[in-house]
Length: 64
Image 1 (cartoon, helix red, strand yellow):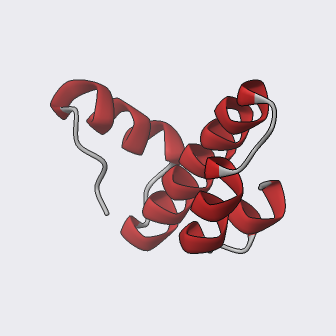
Image 2 (cartoon, helix red, strand yellow):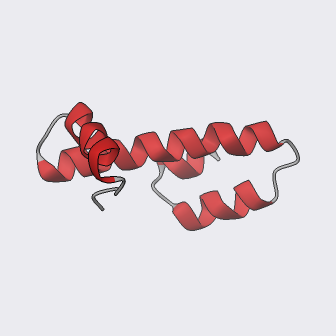
């Protein structure tokens, strides 16, 4: 799952998450995917990752 998140492949990531034997693995990888999405959004917008996280806390929306 971490490899799928690092490769920005949510379809592969979702397939692995849905078939994980340990639910904690899915939760951990969900955090990794969120982190990858935050970094990607920050890079695309040209702002620090902390600014994207602040935006999400204020609005509840992920700027994809």
